[in-house]
Amino acid sequence: PDANAVATTAANRIAAVIRARAASDPARPAVLGVATGSSPLGTYAALAERVRSGELDTTGVRAFALDEYVGLDPAHPESYHSVIRRTVTEPLGLDPARVHVPDGAASDLEAACAEYERLIRDAGGVDLQLLGIGANGHIGFNEPTSSFASRTRIKTLAPQTRADNARFFDSPEQVPVHCVTQGLGTILEARRLLLVAQGEAKADAVAQMIEGPLASVCPASALQLHPDAVVVIDRAAASKLR
Ligand code: F6R
Image 1 (cartoon, protein in one colour):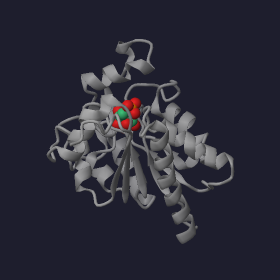
Image 2 (image 1 turned 30 degrees about the horizontal axis):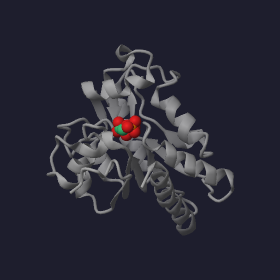
Image 3 (image 1 turned 135 degrees about the horizontal axis):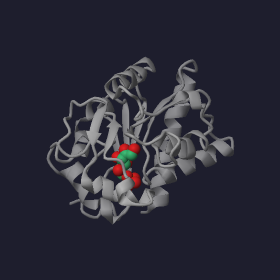
Image 4 (image 1 turned 90 degrees about the horizontal axis):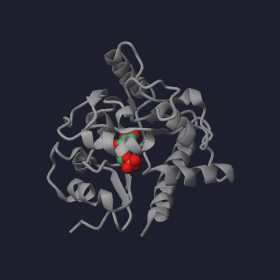
């Protein structure tokens, strides 16, 4: 029905993956893919509450963020390095050395992208990738027309995405123009996908993702290709589904 139910449902699924991995192979704790933005904040808060109460043990859990702005100092409060530390690493009690964010400040960005792909592979791949969806249907920062086969790379943010994210900056001009993002091909390799969305503003993108054609103009439609993709949305975000 609402954002609280989305957060609880998503947190249950993530907690189940963390517990299942710890039980089946204690030497290889869960590898999570994490998103920034407002959509997963309730989910992170619900998980943090379980960690605080001792209900969930995140020891050894590794996390890979989807994306990062290019040209923003990692110490900037809105860099995804900072956002992930504030909303994921610290509240979930993760070891900072096991939390990875693409390097948007590297002098050789292409090498940094290749290195990020290698890190994910060396970790054994992602067990569960948590996703939000942009109003234009993007996942990660794979803007419309991104290739379904794409890997971690440099992208230009769509004007709508820059406008949507201007709320996190003092002025719209401060929103970076470029980013580094996991590709759709990278995301599709995660063993499970879990997309969360709330609110009317996401209703069109959600309908396109689920009931529209498989088409790169709606990058999230790539979820239709995945054998274990779960979408958790509230009534408002579901309002345009037939
Ligand atoms: C962020 C990301 C983006 C967001 C999307 C929705 O890491 O990957 O795809 O999930 O822009 O943003 P919010 O949740 O702020 O509406």
